[in-house]
Image (cartoon, rainbow, N blue to C red):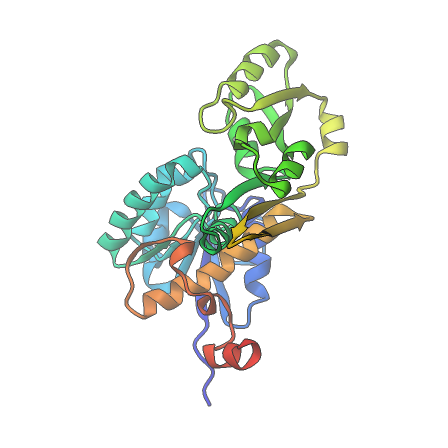
Length: 322
């Protein structure tokens, strides 16, 4: 029997996420990497590198384009343009603005006859699915989402966009008392009460007050949270802040006709971009398959059948798991 044609994948952006996606695509049995689009002429990769300005020239050569771009400005400014040319996958993580992002990407993808798989990753993404599934089990669910302890790529990117920031990361830390209250049930816990945010920044001392103010007053990312900002030297940053751990959990509990149950979904990630990239690649497979079946427009993770994520066939999965 003839092997199926591999899914032809490409990447835009070659930061931490882009490099993780490159390595992960190479491990897939049904994908091949066509190349990487970048504004830079030279990248530390053996893959073909194309000018991002010439992306349209490659529209017929790519089945799925992974948008490994930041959510603060890059995805809002660039993603719709790519969706007119390619079936795309992004990790847009500004929860409040996902509905408007979906609307914009749906129009662009339909205009180009493509699929735009939006907001993949683990939150939004896998946590979105777990929240929906767990909540459906309880007539009156009590549900709480916690992030961390770990480094947030989206929030770190937002910090690095501030003028004067030389290097910067942001750590999200859940409060232990909030975790305990969520498992017990019956407590009112807001996301902003349940977490602390801690930024670590390298910057000129003259800019510290301005940068701290820009961080703690940043809408959608830091406003309303207890946020601390620590300024460190370049050497200290290099020594202590190169790892990219993260994780989190969704805790859902409630009464089931007289008995109480709790469902908890948790992640502990040694390197956040690798796991985010793994989710992105799986949803890239689904996006390519859905497009091949005639689907167009924006698609969220809630709309994707789980079997479409796997390189195995549906028959194989049913024989193994059902």
